[in-house]
Image (tube, rainbow, N blue to C red):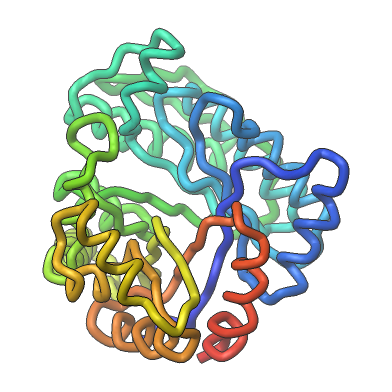
Length: 316
């Protein structure tokens, strides 16, 4: 099964005076979704931001990329997600992960537990959240969370719940994603609590294919159809240029990857519009990745990418 191409824009903040016009322009450009990350600092808070974007738009999907399970109790997060899904008319993509940025934990005074505990919390949280979307009462007793007859999060229409997106880079998290997610975000494994120059080497073409295989095998073992899973990536660097060599060499020098590896790495989309289109089609053929999200800080790039990549590939 080949999923059609979809494209998203990740935002961190917007001009306070014309944010509505900006998100409506992204919608008009043909993007499928607007995402918000979940970090502390000066970026806008994602629950509030996504609800506002949903209210200001009509067709574009909104999503979290991704909520950190440790920042909100799953009962609270279930209610926030269900409310956003209702406000958007069913356009919410619920992205959630186990957390990775140690500086956020230090800033907020939250214990930064070992990965295994954070991933265990994520799987338990998903059980609670899904229960609260579909059941009148949800009781759960796990090692990390306990609920006692938690009431339904909201009156969602029959059969309408948010799509679940789980992002990650390590085998345990990606196998969890294979068991539970509708959309799987393939990223680097960040085992140092921060992005370092070597992080990108974890997302070379061969490593990406290995990660995809973990997801597919886990889905099969859970009795799910792996072909139904939509694979997603978030780009670190995106540039449309007829001379990609200098930028690829710069990225190569910063990451330790070869220029050829940079050219094939999903984290870096650098080249002319037609070259990027060809590369994305080849990448989808090899790995199944069809859902590509770019950073939205450079709005001129957002518009050019829409014209030269989104328009030619959307619907294909």
